[in-house]
Length: 381
Image (cartoon, rainbow, N blue to C red; front, side, top):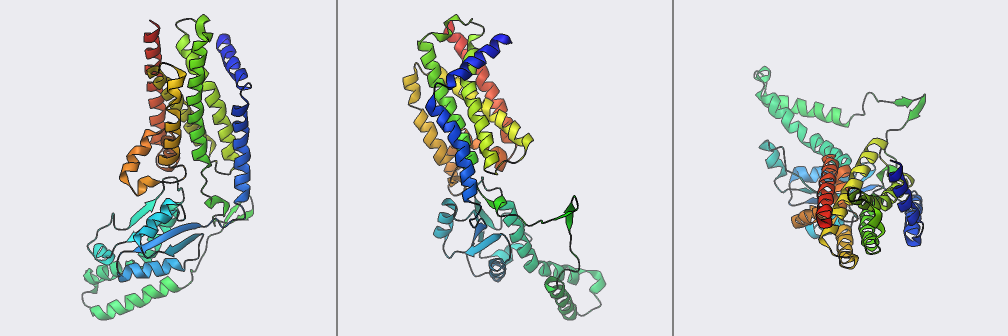
């Protein structure tokens, strides 16, 4: 154990001889802090686009209702599909809703799924909020139809005039939908009144988490280049056959670990940190994933020069295809396949899609390490 601590300290000490690496580590928290401060006074409302494919009366009522809704979500209408997709790609709109021309007909046929199309980015953690607002408006305008159908088919109303019953029910429905609520909830914490309205800071959609994921991946890749240099200098010559693969893993792990730690600090400073348990678990799963992947693929290259050729590919691919700044996958299905070729996608999807991505990263990283260690030992024979 003492020997492994010595290896860890030696690899850590070597990091202080890399000024560019240290500069980037210090720059990330600073950038995160100033980025969060610059967005405090900005209008951070969630912009959501609305588009109607036809002239359905129900869709028109819903859109008209949402356009005047008083909430942190700002709805606006677009008149053509091209503008809609462009707004989602450029993140002018965090998501967009497309109302079909036969919306009323589909609901009358009791179709419940895949009626309203939603275009969104998987990095948008606030889309469920706009979903609830849109569904609330849909319910408010269509529930009366469900109520009338149920009432007129109910045996207790058979002896009454259907038209009179409909008029009375509709009048009562409009009364209760337009009257102010007769009660309200107030939540208090430690004796202080707490507002349930989302603050503007909570509505900030930040690319910092994606940048952090790409930097960790990039650090692991450059660590492999350093490993090739160490091999050429025969630094690991005195290390035993049994320990050499694990020392190689450690040489990639240490720089990536420190990059990850500074990334976690950056998330705290940028106010995008979620909770300690999930952040820690997903961080370690991603760390094992990128270290295992880079350790494995180095086995297919003869030297650091040839390995350096793939670094720009992985870097640009991660920035373009992974949902760091833009999400092309919600518009073009082929991009949804391509984004999974780049590791930052799995880290981001752990937060924004499903926690099972974190489990997949951990298992994948373990498999990569297992294969990489055995390949290195085969090469040593």
